[in-house]
Length: 257
Ligand SMILES: [Zn+2]
Image (cartoon, rainbow, N blue to C red; front, side, top):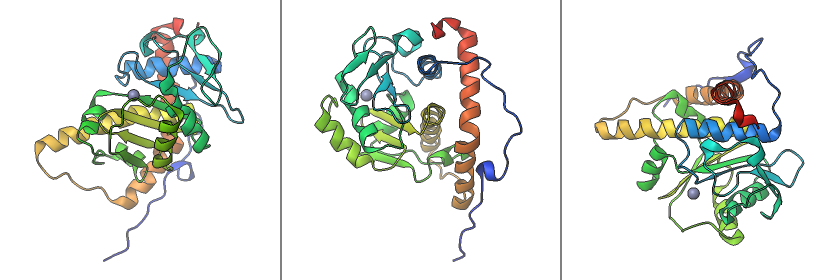
């Protein structure tokens, strides 16, 4: 057996000299609102279900969406702040008890500054089969050795102890599929978490479509996937985010209010 060649990727191989900017300075709440709108636009959100939390560096409190508003309609002034125990610190709305899933993940995973959870359709389909998606396309390299399956549905995660148990299972994976439920995507910043969230829905859709052909997919070389993973995280995530923000703001500037 020959040893597999690992390809380098990411900014060490190529870094752009300039990248298209968002074009406007955004407050943290505006960035959150843009993330909700964009993820709703691409079909990631099941109407008002799910949450995004962002715990900025060196802070214990976190931004979150309020309970009851759809991701598609959120604006910057709707964003609430909760403390590390999920108590609402500021905001004009209430926050779901399911937020404990996020507060406990933030507690156990200091690297995960942003946690995104919802039930996008194709992730839900794969989750209904109680499996992780097979990585059959280069975008799937984003999730190489970085996915975890919670195999049993355990009802609503509405108490700290339930969330704590779940967060303990997840380990260091940035992408978690919850059987019969949905997905959790994490990132060290908003751009990375959003990019993972958007990508996993497409990865699951492709994995499902490949599955139903009944044919064996062509295999990717693992060593090449390692390099691709670095490129997707280090190079693509920020540029993706800037484009998503530009288009979201262009579609409705009211998102910033
Ligand atoms: Zn859920």
